[in-house]
Amino acid sequence: MTSNASDEALRETRDMLAESARRFAERGYGADVRAASLAHPEGCVPGVWAQLAELGWLALAVPEDLGGFGGRAADLCAVAEPLGMAGLNEPFAEAGVRAPALLAALPDTNDAGARLLAAAMAGEIRLACIAASAARDWNACQEGQITGRSDVVPGGAGADAWLWARAEAGEVTLFALARDLPGLQAQACTLIDGQRAVRLSAQSVTVPAPLWRGSADAWRAAVARADALALLTHSAMGVGTMRRARTLTQDYLSTRRQFGQTVVRNQVVQHRLVDLLVEIEEADALVQATAERVDAGIDDPRWLAATGATLAAAARHVWQETVQLHGAIGITQECEAAPLVRRLALASVQHGTEAHHLARLADASLGPLPLHASH
Image (cartoon, rainbow, N blue to C red; front, side, top):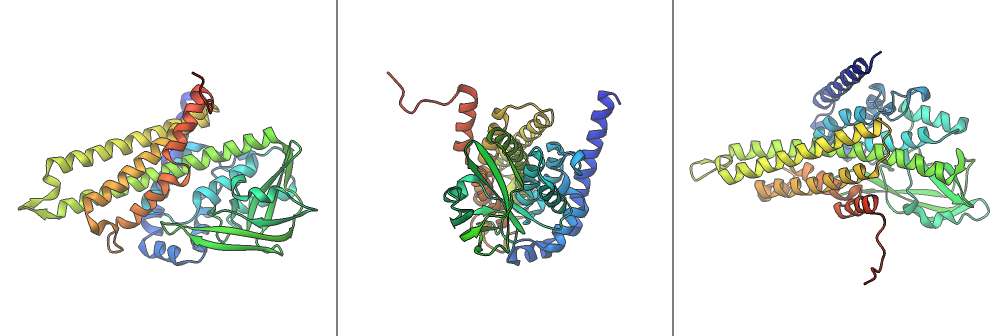
């Protein structure tokens, strides 16, 4: 197959994925389903998660040689944007992308790790990753046991197991902490937009057999791969949410009347709506361009940092303008845009603030700056 034919086939696949996601959002994830997800103690309706697995979306982050559907970032983005427009509450970016991508990126995982990955892709179990920063004191594992508390683990509520890594003597060991481990307690918490997360408490928990053990370099490469796919999925969902918020805002301004005409006829309001559209399109273009580079194997952290910074800034601007143009009704339960406002407020900080990503961009472009500049 020629390069042009291959590119065309990939585009067709991407279009079909986007269309299937739009149909799912329109027919399978209405307001009643989303309300059920928000009310569910785990923030995830089991039937919806099973649908995501049946559609193959839980295997999109995994290469074909491991039983997945390619591990292409652009495919994930094609699915994620319509899900963002629908306000999907299930932890797709964390449990459906980050955790499988991490297991798939590790070289030579054992049979237990392979079985865990297959079960996650099939939707039989849900996994969540415990970031190193979320369980700092767990690293001091005494006599095969861990004791301590974790910070918030996004997407971790109701997970069947949490992936936790321990670094020691230049090596990293990955474990799957099953929810029924004696001494391990999970306390669910609700984020500002209704998504569920979890805090874990370990009291003399016996560490299970490892899934993987390898060099710190191999671990960092796998984490970087999983982080990149999760960030792009999160960003594409954010673009979808911003599009929906802007559409609802324009619709509202087209019906509300002041001084004998609809508010949307005010030229200043029109300019603000256009500014939002331009900012959303810029964010979308950068997400797509970064996904193409990730799929091409171009390892350039500047693009990911720029994407994170752009998404954070755009999400903040869109939710603020949505409230400003709606007025006070924009934050009430009765307003259809209110859940999107909360989702975008979280999206602007969840994977790093604009300042955080700009600092990463500066480091990648110029190198780390000294703490004390010499004069």
